[in-house]
Structures are given as C-alpha cells and as structure tokens.
Amino acid sequence: MKPVYLLLFVLAASCTSKPTSEVYQVAGNAGAESAGQQVILEKFDPINQVATAIDTATVSPEGQFVLDYAFSEPELLRLAFPSKKKVLLVIQENETNVEVNADGRTDSCSACSIISAYESFREASFNRLVKPKDEALDAVLEAGKSATDFEVVKAYSEASAEHRKELIDFAKENMQDSPALYAAALRWTDEYNLDELADLVNAFEAQFPDLEMTKNMQAKVQRFVNLQVGNTAPAFRFETVSGQEQSASESYGDLTLIDFWASWCGPCLVKIPQMQAIYDEYKAKGFEVVAFSLDTNDKKWQDAIEKYALEWVNGSDLKGYKSPVAVDYNVTLIPFNVLVDAEGKIIEKSLSVERLEEILEERL
Image 1: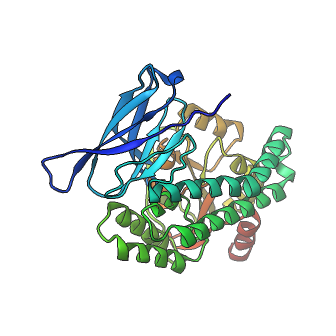
Image 2: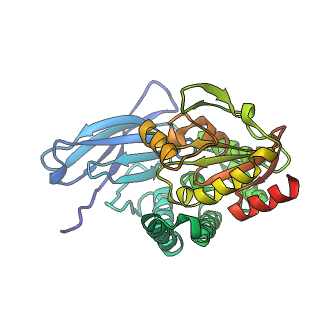
Image 3: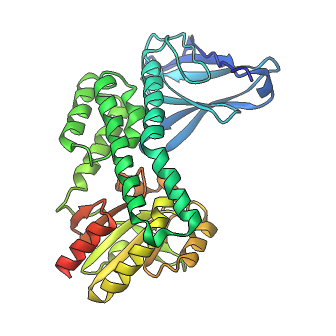
C-alpha cells in the first residue's frame, strides 16, 4: 500500500475580538479513504493526560478537511485522524503555513520538527530497550511461570528506567529552547537527577515565563520534590472493591506499600506471587499494602483481584492515568510504588520486590 501523506496548512484567517487571539485554519488531506469521517483538533495536556476538542471537521470525498484554531500562545495541539493516527503540533507565532505528513514530520514548523524527531527517537529507544523485555514478560505470563521469573521483571524495570533516562537526555540536548519540550514532559521521572530536571524547566521558564505549559511543567517538578524521601506522601481517597470510600491513611500499618498497578500491566502481574509471599510473612508484623489500580474497566479490575486472590487493600477511581491520584504521584509508568511509615513519611520509592523484602526484614 502506498503511504498516505497528510498535508496540513495553518493559515491566519482573521482577528477575533481579543487582540491577543488570532483565528487560524488547519487544513489538509487525510486521503479519500477517510471521506465522511472525522478529523479532530485537540488541545493536549500530556502531564494530566487531558485532551480538549477545539474543532472537528468531516473529511470531504477528496480527502480534504479544514479546522479552525484560535492562536493566543504556543500550546501543544493534537490532530486525531480517522486512521487512529495522532500527530502532535506546537504552532508558534508567525508560523502560519505548516505542512505535516502522515508520520508527523515537517520542516515548516520548528517546534513540530523537534517533536517529530523526539517521537522517532522515543520509538527507536523503546524498540531497542523495552520491547524485548516486554515480550519476555508476555512469555512468562503465558507460560504461567510468574513465581519463578523475578529476574524478568527486574530486567524490564531496568530497561524502562534506561529508556526514560534516554528521553530526558534527548530533551535536554534538543528541546530546552523550544515549546516542543512540553511534549516530552509526560515521561519525566525523578529517577533522573531531579536538580538537572529542575534546571531544564527553569531555563525554559526564563524564555517562556507566561505560558500555561511552563506552569504545568513547573508543577510537575514540584510534585517530584514533594515525593522525595522524608516528605509526607500525598493523601488520597479511593473506592474499594466493595464500593466503600476511604482514605489511604486509614489502612496504614507500621510500614505500608502504596502500589500502583493495573489488570493489563504485565510487570505488575508477574510479581504478584512474590508480593503475596512477602505480605503473608509480614502482615502480622505491621506491613500493609494499599494497591491503587489504574484500570478504567471495573469488571477487569475486579476480575484480576479475584483471579490473583489479592487480599490487601484494593482501591481505584477507574480513571487510569487521568486519575488525580496518579497525577499527584506523577505516575506515568507502572508498576510504581512508594513505601511509607505509619505517619505517611516516604521511606523509599520504586522498590523492587527484593529491596522491599530487605527493608521489611530490617525494620519489622
């Protein structure tokens, strides 16, 4: 099949009543095979995982579409095509003619070009580092060998951490002078040097002090600061499997693991047998687990709890990564966990099963 190229043109059309806002047209060709279907232009917040529709257009019989966009400041936009392809754009002032192909590559929009380069790098890094470990995890789950294959989980976690580090390094080297940096903020982790991450955002703030994206990135870095060892873990409430609402702190033991997981998360499922063995050994000594699921399907969540006989505290708001709890804890990849004491003070984060067992043996 020949590749379909999506040519997008952003044209200044007229001025609105607000002097700081200018209406542009986003036009392009999605291919005749998409005729009659919808193309959606969205404002996308990658940190809070929120997409807000700006305009929708029906693709013509010839494959063409036109969308309206009121420009007031650089912000991250996302085009959602009938093919399910999504293309990220950051349009800056005076960039009124933007052409983007089906892969999101463009030479006519500086920030768009940087985003495209980042996405290409991200895909290559993922395929090189994470994908092989992910496939190994799937094989373990299919074979039902989760109780004896802890090393597979460890290898996956290490590969994921290296992948995230490569993405932050790429952002530091190529994106800090451009609003394109916002597109990379989704995958930031404080396993990286937090001071360097703060410096990156501070340098961006010096150039773009008033942008909404600047404030969002500053808030994310501050949440990383709030989650440092010795600070109090963010309080949150959730609904249990039985439908009761409670706060996490109601279930705190002498040591409590706040564990983020989901029924669809292979690495989460593979480590359950080891976690259950630890829980059985240390529960009577003051250890507790509060498992917060990032599922969005209630039945799948409850089925997983029943299938794996999870006896610890289970809660969720069924909002996935959009959950305010996930945002407060800067969770963009699972499994992720935080170990707290009886007062909710953070002892350690992102613990392996082995490391968790070491701490419990020392303290309980």
